[in-house]
Length: 386
Image 1 (cartoon, rainbow, N blue to C red):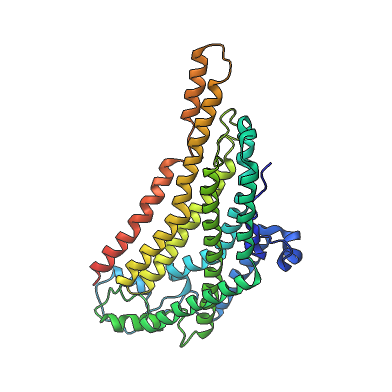
Image 2: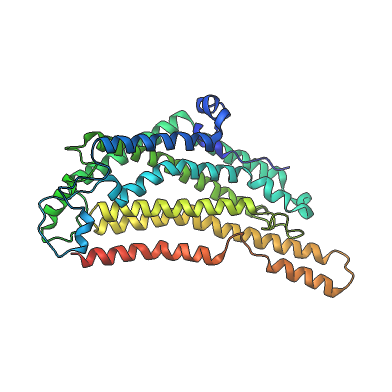
C-alpha cells in the first residue's frame, strides 16, 4: 500500500503535525472553518474601520477617478479612489483572505492523491513498485516538512514583508493610475492627485497604508507556500509517473461520475481558480496601480512562467498518467477471456473514450484564453490612453 503525501506540513494553518495552531484552533473548527471565521471577522473589522475613517465610499467633494472616463477630458484638482471604488483593492483584499482557503483545498486533494489513484488500478496494483514509490513519498514529505519549519517560515515571512513593503514604497513614489489618465493633466500631476485621494495613501491614511503592507505580506507568504507545495507536488507527479504511477481513471466502473477522479476534479478546479485570481490580482497591481511599462511586461511574463511550471506542467503530467493507465488497462482486457471478440473491442473502445482529465476541455480553454488575452487588452488600452 502506498503511503500518503503530507502537504499539510507546509504550515500550522494547514494542519502541520504538532503545530500550536492545530492544537488551539483546528481541532474544534477544522482548517476551512477556522480560515473562514477569522477571514470574515477581519474583513468586517476592516470595513467598519474604513467607514469610520471615511475611506470606504469616499466623499462628495471629489469625483471618482474612474468616472472621468465617461466625461469629456478635464483638469480636476482632486479625485477620490475609495476602498469600495478601487477594483484592484477589492481584488487584492478578496484574494488575500481567500488564498489560504484555496491552499487548504489543494492540501486536502494532494493528501488523497495516492489513495485515490491506487484504488482505481486494482487490476495492476500488484505490479506497482511500492518500495520505490514509498521512498519517493518520504522524500517529498520531507520537502513539505522543511517548507513548514519555523526557520523556513520566518525566512518566507521576511521576504514577503520586504516584497510588500517595496511594492507599497514604489506605489508611494510613482503614484496610482499613471497609465490610466483620462484627464488633460500631465501624467505626473494626475498620478499625484489620484494618490492623494487614494484610500491607502501614506500621508493622510497611514493606518491603511500599514494595513496594506500587512495584507500584502500575508498574501505573499501564503502564495509562496502554495507555490512551493505546487512545485514539490509537480516534481513528485513526474517522478512517480516515471515509475508507473500517476493519475489513473477507474476504467472498470464509473464509481463517482468521473471514473474515480472526482477529488482530482476538485483539486483542478481550486487550482485553476486560484491561479487565475492570483494572476489577475498581480496584473491589477502592476498594470493598473503602477505604470504600464517594460517592467510590467517582464513581471507578467515571469508570473506566466511560474504558473506554467506549477499548473500547466502538472496538467500535462496528469494527462500522461491517464494515457498510461488506459494503455495498461487495454493490455489487461486483451488478456481476459471474453464471450466474443466484439465484446472485447467494445470494452477497449470504451476505455479509450474516457476523458483523460475530469475537467471540461472547453472550460480549460476559456480560462487559458482569458489568461493570455487580458494582458494584451490592458496593454492596448494603456497605450491608447497615452
